[in-house]
Amino acid sequence: MAARLSGKVAIVTGGSRSMGAATSRLFVDEGAEVVIADILDDEGLALAEELGAAARYVHLDVSDAEAWSALVADTVARHGRLDVLVNNAGVYRRAMIEDTTHELLDLHYKVNQLGVFLGMQAAFPAMRDSGGGSIINVSSISGLGASIAGHAAYGTTKWAVRGMTKYGAREFGRHGVRVNSTHPGFIDTVMLLENSEETNDNIPNLTPLGRRGTPEELARVSLWLASDESSYVNGAELTIDGGTSV
Image 1 (tube, rainbow, N blue to C red):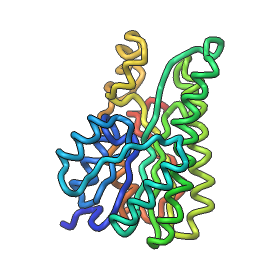
Image 2: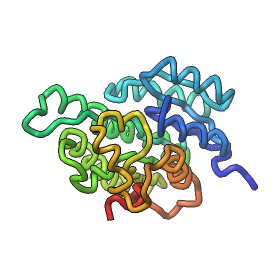
Image 3: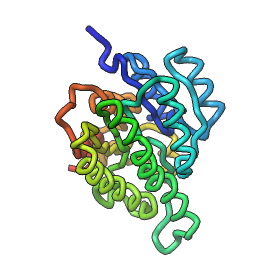
């Protein structure tokens, strides 16, 4: 069987660890050339070395429009095209609304919301010129509902990702560029360390499947959206949460 991403070139933001690393690994396994973009340089370089010639690491602050333009231009210059963007980079800090500072709001906005917008904006022309592509925006179940108190700064940016995905799907679709969002629930990553011990201990009770998800389970959904198997899927919201949000 042919690799599902053979011949495709992908950028994965926040690609150095957790869900991003799992996605980068799976994409390489399925034949893609992958640019791992992150600010975690040591982890990103180590992962690129592990994955070999099909992967390389680039330092990227997703809130920097010029850095995005440079990354996409360099990707096209080196690889000849851009087919897939996974907007996975994100931050998560808990605070009740009354305790949320402007600094905390700004942090979430710059990474989770502005970073996704700039990524879509930078990637679209290159994908259009390549004949089409797939943009996968990683939102959250907190972008579908107020899943747990204390998520307002984080959750509102994830609602914004959901909306930007819809507009991107509407505007880019006629050029063969699809935009979809994924909505992970309690995935076993370092982000869960921001939750209280009580919340994390209660995950099996909150989730009908009775367990946390794995980064690899989210990566497999991103693989499907990146591949031609999902060629008529545009503007969709895919929930990967074990049934938490039903």
